[in-house]
Amino acid sequence: MSSLSTAATPVVPDTPSSQTPTPRGEITIRVSQVLRHTSEVSGFVLQRIDGHPLPTCEAGAHIDVYLPGDLVRSYSLCGDPARSHEAYEIAVKREDRGRGGSRAVHSWVREGEILRIGAPRNLFPLAPQAPHHLLLGGGIGMTPMVAMAHALHARGEPFTLAVFARSAAYLPLKNVLDTAPWRDRVQTHFDDAPVRTSPASLVAAAPAGSHAYYCGPEGFMQHVREACQHWPAERVHFEYFNAPPKSEAASAAAPATAGFEVVLARSQKRLTVGPEQNIAHVLQSAGVRVDTVCEQGICGSCITPYLDGTPDHQDFCLTEDERATHIAICCSRSRTPTLTLDL
Ligand code: FES
Image 1 (cartoon, rainbow, N blue to C red):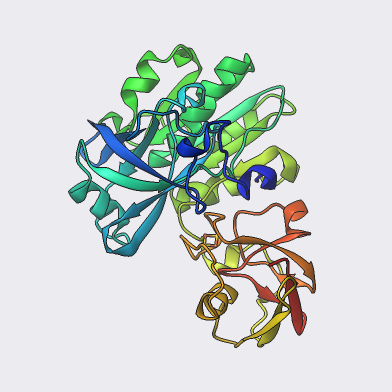
Image 2: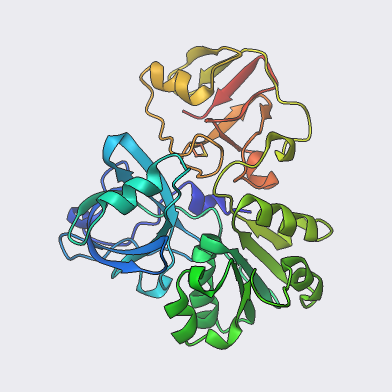
């Protein structure tokens, strides 16, 4: 799913040191514009307060937004990556039954507000090349797909952007879909249409060798996941909002529940992780700085290289190749009595 070279390293431009993000990759920005996309989705245009360029980003990247009350939430960038040095754009759906992040954004973030954000991370990159790219977005899950559509149009590669919403009134970013130079590549599918098209039918009809990308609510994710299950894994790319049910975790074996020891290779510190603890919290309690945002194995902020031992991977953001060298320490554990981290 991801490209760790970009996932682990924030994309930072070649700019003077006074303009670069802080060591944590944080950037202070001003909300230069608030856009009302639908009754439940607002867009936010973010620019640096010093007027200097932002770190450029790739299509599929997301940023962490630091909110009052120590809330941190990750949002996909949906603007044109080619113009990301000028401004970032996110679109946030208000989830009244969510964990509080989107409510905080909608009730607190206004035009002119000063915010801290993290530098972009990309766990959902486009394939370098493909005969066709099928972008499937369910509701607000279409946001990274819009950035991908901008990038693919610029690359001159064939793609289809299929977006699914309850009805036209709930379609986020409609203004972009209607006016973008790639608008002829857009298909809109609404639940209230007399004849409904399923994402699975689009997967089935995709040209040979296509790469599929999907993001949306859990039911949508499950539907597309099943439709793509016969495709080679390297041609299927996805990003979750929330961790899916444990039964769908990528680890086929039952999760490891026993305690184990973590060794920090650089300091030779040894720390015990109890059966009910996670590695990130144990490290943080011992004074080791570990960034965590989602704590569900989705956002990639806690991904850490390991040197020895066998992890019990429980994340939803690393590819099998990446898992050979890295572990998401917010959710994954160890299958061996000792796990050595490159920290
Ligand atoms: S904190 Fe998000 S993947 Fe670990």
